[in-house]
Length: 202
Image 1 (cartoon, rainbow, N blue to C red):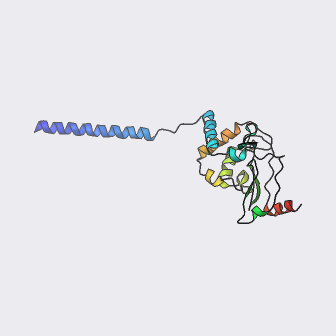
Image 2: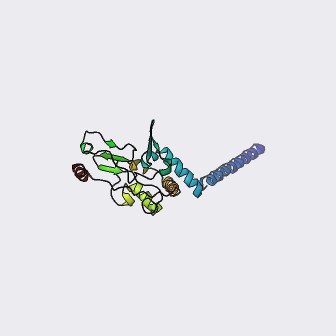
């Protein structure tokens, strides 16, 4: 009887020790701090997000080929070319039920909102995002407002979906954009429907 009691007590002791060891191990695993990305890692992460999100489709000027428009690698993410003439305009896209117009290089759009031009996302200080802070960039995406609290970001920019990215992802995107070659290209301001009507009437 004494031997059985001794075995039971010893077994229970080992069980308690084992449980405490598992618990301590779980606590150690639970308190593991997330890895802090280096600047190089952030740029790589940002490149991946920008590429897979197809940002170049609209924000990079194109060269027309026999297979359609392809990105101009010398002007990546520099937005609508400031000096490129637009095709002939009319006001049909501003009225419900009509087609929306897209320029041949996919950097200009005409719809019920008027005319929108894709922005220069390179770090040029005067015409791109070179003077922007990280928080300004994040607030712009989160709020759907230019510079975070300005005019509305217009279609077809899918800012409401991009806003679902984490802060770390948006910081990575910003780090990547800031690593690009600065390109001086002052994209025209958006044109409201009333101003579009005036442009067409000239």
